[in-house]
Image (cartoon, rainbow, N blue to C red; front, side, top):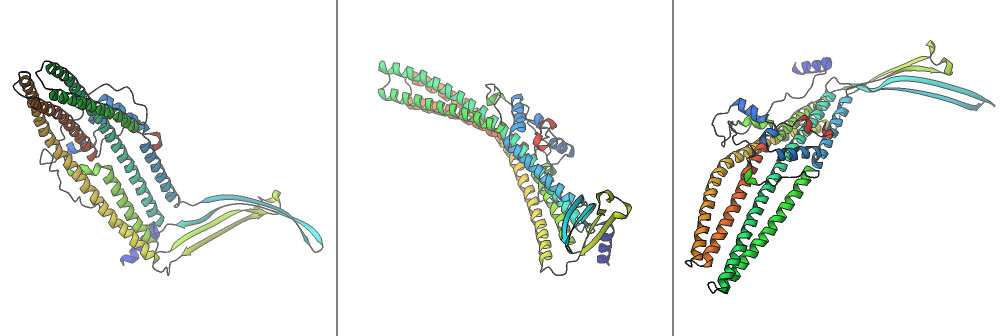
Length: 469
C-alpha cells in the first residue's frame, strides 16, 4: 500500500524520492573546556558569530591592508571565479526541468530530370516545437537540480573560508612585521651597547687592566651582534614582501610601529557554546555537501521508474512561398515516448549504492569537520590563558635580567668579576627581550587563530570582489 501511495504521489505532484534530510548530532560537548564560564549564553554566541572583522581587527593600518587584500588578492579572485562556474553548473541542471523550444525554417528549390524532361520544384516550411521534454513525475531532474544547488552553495562557503583565511593571513603577516621590527630594534640596541663596551675594553686593554683575550672576546660578541642586526633587517624586508603578496597591490606607507605598541584585538570572548561552530564556512559547506548527497539518492531512485518525454512541433509547409501561411498549409506533430528500465545489468542499483555511500561519506566528513573545529577553538581558548601567564612571567624575567646585567657591569668595572660573568648577563638580557617579543607574537597570533576558528566575522558588501558578486 505504501508503494502504491508513493507512485501515486509521484505521478500527481512530482514527489521527490530522496530520503528526508536529518542533520547529524554534533559529536562534541556542548561547551568548550577553555571557555571562561561553564554555561553558554545564546545571545553572546550570536554576537560573536556576527562580529564584523573590522570590529575585531581594530588597528587602522591593518584594516586598510585587509581591505586591499580582499579587493586584490589573486587566490581569492580565482576562488570567486570557481564559484561562478558552480553557479553555471546549477543553471544547467535547472534548465533541464524546462522545455526546450526552438523555431526553424527551410526552403528548397531544385530541378530534376524525369520522363525525358526537366521539372522545377520548390518547397518552404516554418515550424516551432518542443524537443524531448521530460515530464519529471518522479522528480529525478528536480533532485539533480537540488544536488547542483547544494554543490554551488558549498563552493560559495569555500569562498567565504578563503576570505576568512586571507583576513587571518594578512593579520599574521602584519603582526610578524611588527614583531620583527621590534627584534630589529633590540638588535640595534644590543649592537650599540657592544660598540660602547668594546671601546671600553680597548681602553682597559691599553691600560693593562684587561687582557688581550678579553678584548678579542668583546670584539667577537660585537660582530655577532652585527650579524644578528643584518639578519633582523633581512627578516623585516622579507616580511614586507610577504605582506605585499597577500595584499596583491603595492603597499601603502606603513608607520614604523612595533608589536609592543599595539593591543589589536578584543581581549575577552565570553560564554562560548559549541553551536557557534555551525557558523564556520567549512562546516556549512560540509552540510551543503551532505544535503546534496541526500538529493542524489532521490535522483538515483527515480531512475528505476519510467521516464516520459514529449516531442511536438507545429508549423506551415507549402510549395510556394506566397502560400506558406495559408490556412490549409498548417502541419503539426505530437510524439510522446516512454522509457521503462527492464534490465540494466545492475547499473541502476550500483548508481543507487554510490549515492548512498556518498551520503554516508558526507556524514563522516561533516562530523569530522565539527570535531576538528572544536579542537581548534578549544586549543585557542586554552592557549589564551596560558599565554597570559607566560607573558607575566617573561616580563619578570626581563626585569631580573636587567638587574643581573647592571650588577655584572658594575662588578666588572670594579674588578670584582671577570668578563665571562658580564657576557652571560648580556646574553641573558638579549635572549629575554627576544623571547618576550616572540611570546607577544604567539599570543596575538593565537587571537587570530581564535577569530578564524570561530568562523570569522562578517564580510561587508564593499569588501566583496566583482568576480564573486
